[in-house]
Structure formats: structure tokens, C-alpha cells
Image (cartoon, one colour):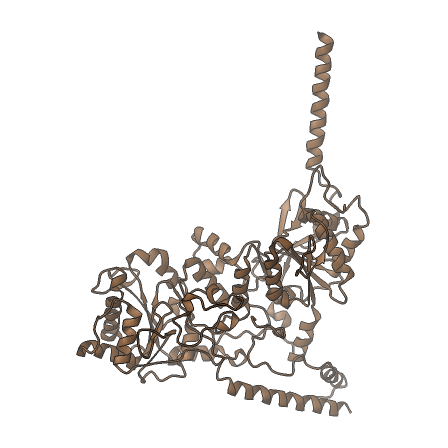
Length: 320
Length: 318
């Protein structure tokens, strides 16, 4: 009799596991229960990410050093791009400082990277010195993509460029091929410094060189790259007209909890205190034992009758 | 001349003695001489280590997780309705039962009306109400309006503790002879502690219903004194490394403190990975915190915890 109960329990659990696995296969990737430290470590080897941070002498102490202390070291390689070479270490590009020099900095940065590190990466991320990035989540998104394809990812904006462009502040990441084409664009004159607006101008060059803008949203349609800090998206608001900072979005923007993926890649306008706060939230603070939402195994809580049966069988010395 | 002088001196002497008496009484904490038992009680409560929980099977983990159940006593004020709404929609959802206690009634505020303005009287009444309505819940957590709690980590802390033993846990502060739990960072009481407290409420000499007018003690100290009468002492909640789990400031505030002290590792020095409370938070900060605690994470970091807590049903922000 007890064995029958146990058989039923085992069968139900097998069915639940099957349902769970099916759920996982339809929900492409985002589930903790299959996440594995080894997978993350492998990703680091298989998805080589070179990060370059747009910064300048004035910001090294006040901002950039906090990136160096947090997410910078998670890239396979990180380069801090400035107008001056220093022991920070920063790369000195042939530019001057100033808001109107940002596209020149970008062009020179990519040229430097292509010249000196061509074989060291599969993808190149550009970020500002006030961008917070979760490198593991970026690698995970990119692991499904082919770096030999001409594609780039970020927070897609609608205006100014036909195929759209990626927000500079939220960070954007170019495939190996995309970087090649960017360089070629400037070598051949197909791309030029026609504007000082760095992200829009780069977006135009991408379009010209046939580099496709990728969709960086997760399976639930939630954004991963964010050009503003978390409170500007997450706070629940009563139904209202779209605030100004969501008007550029290519994909229909969402306010409230659905704005953002659990596996976010970036937030922007993040100053040191919030940088460390996000680092703490991401890599340290957690609710013990919590099963994050996603595909949840159905057979929770484990029915008492099954526990009891196992206990009884154990007591009489029978192995299930 | 001499008689006037002497009555003046008498008056001075009397006044001096009276003054001395008053100041002595002011610093006098009523109650007990320290008994031998005081020396033996624990001052620190640590979360269980992994080894203690290693050998559990999944069904056992589920069963264990369902054993600790928390009744949240959340104090709110009608003046700031948004705190009630936020606590209800954020961390309150993770309590097995969350009950709001207000100083006065207000439309749209679903709370127990304590009809009190005095802080100690409010706490007194709320705890009594909680005890009377606890059902089969055996752990009680008291929060202020700006406190954010991670109930799963609270459950983990008291996992191996028997609620039929007296426990009074939080961030402890020493004031003279008295050690009390700081109200702002949250107060944890086991069923037995609460039972003893409700019992000593009957003795208004030892434990008055409202603060005495002449020398008014803060409600957190008054609570400690009442509990001390029943043999219950404050214990500091810490993780296995000795880091405090109950914080009276927000994460940002604590990070700022660390930065101004030029700490080598600001995040490591800030707060525990299994912190239970932060306080002094705005409603918007609480909403962001929900995301930070229950959702934001890096792919590939897996934890082999010995408890299982599921996300609450019908919730969209965790």
C-alpha cells in the first residue's frame, strides 16, 4: 500500500520535472535552477569581452576608480580611454576633452582597439564612466550570438537613423565583425565625423556599413540596457503619458516592474554611491533560499503524504 | 538677620538634596540587581552555518522552510499613506501575515486603529493585538514605516531557534545597564517572549501602559525594561562573520559611510549578504530595493541553500 503511494509520488514528481524541463526549453534561457558556476566560468572563456570606458582626467578619482573597483575587472580586458595616458591606467587618445569631442574619442578608441587588440576579443563593449554593467548577463546574452556576424546590441532608440541607433549612456556592444566594419568605414571614407553626437553618429555608421541593430530584450520582452537609473523605470506609476525619457525607445517602453529584466546588463547616470549599492544588490545581498521566478518546479511544497511515506519506509528499513 | 540666613541655608540644603534625589532617580533604571543568570545569557545570535544544514533532502528542506512563520507588525501613520501602500506592495508580501497598526484611523488605510499618539502606548497595544491574533504564527517582527525587511533572511536567522524559548533580537544598543533592541532597525520576538511580555503588561507598576510624564523613556527602552522583568534579554542578530543583520540606515547611507572612511572594499565592509533590515528608506527606494533583492542577479551564480522559499502568488515585483 505504502509502495503504491510512493510510486504515485515518484510518478507525479517525474511528470512535474518533465513539465519543468519543457517550460525551460520554451523560455530560452533565464532560469536560475539551471544556472551553474561552471557555465559562468566557461562563458568567460568562450565569450571574450573587451570593455572600453569613455572617461577623462577630471573623472578618474570621482567616478572611474569606482568602476575599476567594481565591474571593470569582470571584462576579459578593460581599457580606460582618455585624452591623456596615465598610471590609472588610461589610454591616451589623440583628442581633447569636452562634450563635443565624444565622437572623436569613440572613433579613436575603436581604432586603437582594432590596432592593438584585434585578436583579443569576440565583442567590444563601450560604456561611460557613469554606467553600471553586469558583465555576466551581457556575456549570457551574447553567448547565443555569432561574433562573426555584423551586429551590435544596446538600448535601441528610434529617431534620426532609419534603422535606429543604440543609446551611448546605456552602453553598446559591437561584434568583432561590426568593429571591423566600423574601422573600414573610416578607412574608406564611407563613415565620417559628421556629428558630435557620439551614439547617433556611430549608429549612422553602423547602418551605412550594414551592421544590424540587435534586440537585447529578454524572453519576456524586458529591457536589459538602460540609459537612466533604476528608479526612473521601476517605480510603479498610475497610467500616464509617457515621460520624456522613454520617448526615444524603439520597442514599446514599459514602466514599473516589467521595465527591466532580472538579468539586466546596464544602468546609466550611476554615481559612486549607487554604483556600490548596485554592486551590493547584484553580487552580495540575497534572500536566502529564494527560488527566483521563472520556471518553478511544480511539486512544491512536497506533499506531506510523500514525506511521511518515505519516512515510514525508512523506518521499516525499506529503500524506495 | 541670622534667622533669615539660617532659613536660607536650610532652603539651600533642602533644594540641594531634592535636586540630588531627582538626578539620581533620573539615571535609575528600575528593576533588578544583576542575578547570576545574567552572566550566562547569550548576547549574540548568529545565523546557522551551512554544515548544520548540509545533509537535508529536498522534501526535508521544504518542510523545514515551512516551519518558521512570521507575523509582521508594521507601524504606519495616516499622515504618510504612501508608506503603508509601499510596505503592503513590497516586502510585506513576504510575511506569512502582515498587519498594519496605525495611530488613528483614516479612509483607505487598512490598518488596526490603535487610537493612540503616545509611542510606547502604540507599541504596547500593537503587541498585545498581535499576540491575541497570532493564530499559529510563532515569530513576530516589528517594523517602523521606513523599514524594509527581507523576511527570508529573518527566517534563516531563527531557523534553529525554538519559539517556545524567549528571544528578543535585533540591533542591540547599550545604555548604562540596559541593553535594548533599536526600534528603527526592527525588533524580533519569539512567541514565548511575547507571551511573557503580554503577561507583564498586567503589572502596570513594572510595565506601564504609557510613558511616565516625569522621565519619559523611549519606547524601545521601555520594551527592553518590561522584557527584562520577565527574564528576556536583548540579543544582537549577526551573520556567521559577526556582521550585523539589522540596519537603521539605508544601503546608500551605509555605503556613503564606508566611502568617507576610505574603506578598502566599500561593499564588503558595508553590510551582510544576508542582511535582514534597512531603514530610513523612501517609498521609491523600497520599490527599487524589491528589484535589487528579489530579482537583480548575475547569470551563473548559484547557491546551494538549505531552505526553499517560493515567490508569493499574484505578485509582480519579486
